[in-house]
Image 1 (tube, rainbow, N blue to C red):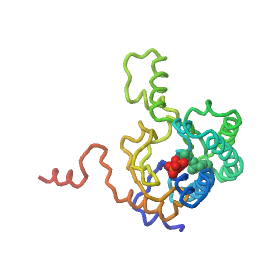
Image 2: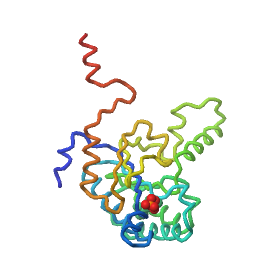
Image 3: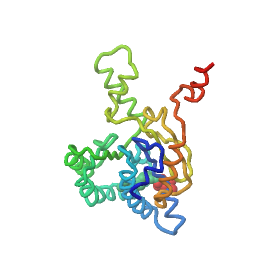
Image 4: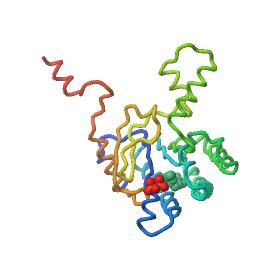
Length: 245
Ligand code: FPP
């Protein structure tokens, strides 16, 4: 496994993952939906380790969207308890290995106990530089853009540039995601990193999140490594051909 990145001609610096399918996995296997989330959390732990091995620098996990408040109260409460346990039991160990952890979203609107855990995690990992782990929590891509615009308006600006939006995002230093993976067959972004994903490569797999394996991840990265990113330009091959005319 240690030489795996050699098989990939390029590795994305930043991967975003929409971890979908916990509920379907549970229902299909005869379990309660909440058990699906618990298994999903275990998959997330493995994916963090694999990301480091692949040489990825930033991993953003879509953990709870602003729209997820529409779920039944008991599922929301279970998710928040699971997150607190997860952050306290696993993240501290991960942080000891040099991981910087941050949260992306309107964290202050979450329950007090979860806010406290998030702040503590951010604080103890703030000087770590080996790997950047970001949990999108109570996150909405549209809201992030609106919040950025409102911050800029407070500066009494009359016109707004793309750079203004960039520098007023929740985590302005984080590079745009190169690759966004979504599990469980749905092919949409669901309000995830809307501004930042303008030129991200998108990869969809039918695999339900609790079943997402090392091979699934590797296949997504292999697919990415074969793509040509043009960012609105023309392919480097056609450019060479034009220059030789
Ligand atoms: C989608 O499954 C997943 C979520 C709503 C949140 C993601 C949460 C986890 C993976 C668990 C906790 C994660 C961490 C990192 C501790 P779904 O319920 O929408 O599945 P469905 O579409 O099949 O119903």
